[in-house]
Amino acid sequence: MKVMANDVFQQMQGMKLEANSNIVERTAIAPSNTSSVDFGNLLRQAIDNVNELQADSKAKATAFEMGDRSVSLGDVMIASQKSGVAFDATVQVRNKLMEAYKEIMSMPV
Image 1 (cartoon, rainbow, N blue to C red):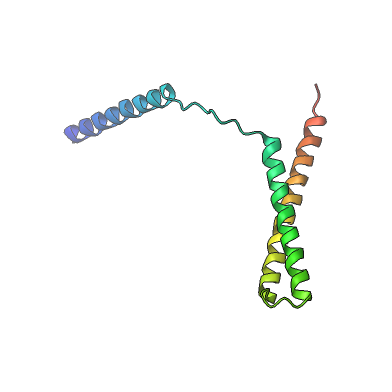
Image 2: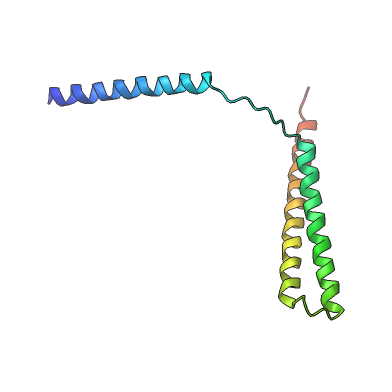
């Protein structure tokens, strides 16, 4: 029984040393983030994407109403749902941003 406990203890010590060496290696070789992403640019791209989806939806609906045979009702409905979901997600993000802003502004300085 003592031999088994000693073996388990040695294995645990070995795993501990291995884990510590991995942590040291990861911190020493931290990747340099050369591409900084601007939050404003990401937000602008997301809003532009929603705008494009809505424009596409409107164009397909108009083409279908005018009798264009290359646009089916299914295409119109899918485009409409895509733009609707994207718009709803954008509204939810805006609401969360506004809640965070209000919370930060109400913090005592």
